[in-house]
Each structure stands twice: as structure tokens, then as C-alpha cells.
Length: 236
Image 1 (cartoon, helix red, strand yellow):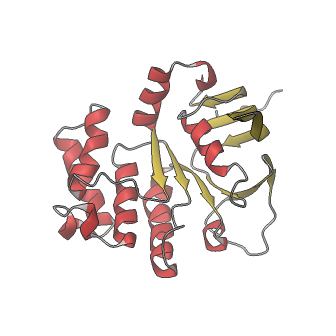
Image 2: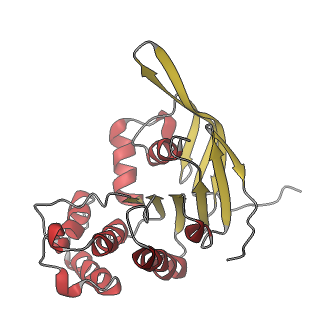
Image 3: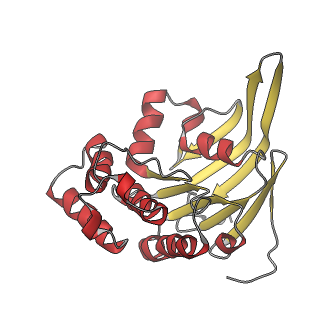
């Protein structure tokens, strides 16, 4: 009798990614197989240039794989149009980047409202959720400020809130603590656990931080474009 397993939030099968550089082709991902279960925290570690960011871009639909399949929420996104991939990303995925990517001409509150506008959720409930998230990340008093008036740690907390404001099912974080000192890095990691785990969200975090590894249910290592489970010497 076949075991009934819940459908994974994301599934990669034989994914490769190559880039053409002048007179040669550089393959940065080699046959990646990966599944992310609903509610799972997965951590991906690897050196600079190992392909971590490329994997995030392929998984989120920003880029297409050169070969293989990327399945999100049961749909094969490697065969989807750019319009469809953008729609899924806006509605069902939250992205957090190393360099915050807050829009400098918008206030912190406006930065949170923009994703809601893009996915058609800018109503009273959406505005209320934005304010609740700003309170949850300790930035209620800064909501009318522009990003350049915030510290690096405050900007990253705002970026986390922005990634969650449209209630995504999958959160992809690319080196979210890479530009932060130890204190602010711990604060951001704490936000992921506090804001995502109770609601059963799935997280894939790309990092080189040993402290970030500790919040993962599973840890993988990407080396020369190939992925493998990684044993940890410390428990969560």
C-alpha cells in the first residue's frame, strides 16, 4: 500500500542552471534534487560562488532552470510563463535579501503596502496586517520614516515584515544576516522563528552563518553546484 505523503511546498528535480559568459558556458547548478515540506525550516550553506543565490532565483521563478523541473505548490513552474511565475511569486512567496532592497523613495509603511497593492490585497485588512507586522518587528514608531533613516538592523527587520505582509506560504531568505552584526543577526533569526513557525510557513534560508544553521530542521550544503544533506555538530 502506497504511503500518502503531503504534497511538498516546493520540489526540484534534476535542476541545472548555466550562464553564457563571453566564450564559455558556466554551469552553477548541477542536477539539484530538493523537497521542502510544509512548515519546514531548511537551511542551505555554502561558500560564495557555490550557486546558493542562483538556486533561490530558480526556485522563486526569477530565473528559469536550464534543465530539470521546479514545482511550486503542485505546479510545474519550469514550464510556466514569466507572467505566471511573477503572479505566483507575488502572491505565495516572500523574499528577503542580504541588501534589504527597500525602496528609498517610500516610507517603511509604504514599503509594506506595495506588495499588497501588487497582489490585490491592499484593503483594510491588509493595512491592518502591515501595521501589526511593523509592531511585531518593533518598528511601529518608524513607519513614517524613509529607509535611510533606519539602521541596518532596522532595515532588515522591515524587510522581513515586507516579505510576510501578503501572508506567503513559502519564504526564501538569501543571506538575511550577511550585513548585520551579531546582535541584529540574532534578532532577525528570532523573527523568523517567532513569526513563521506558529503559522506553519515554510522557510528556505541561504546563509554562511553557523548561528543561522541552528534554526533549521534540515541543513544542506551546496558545493560546486551540487547539494547534499549536512550533519550538524550542534543541536537546535
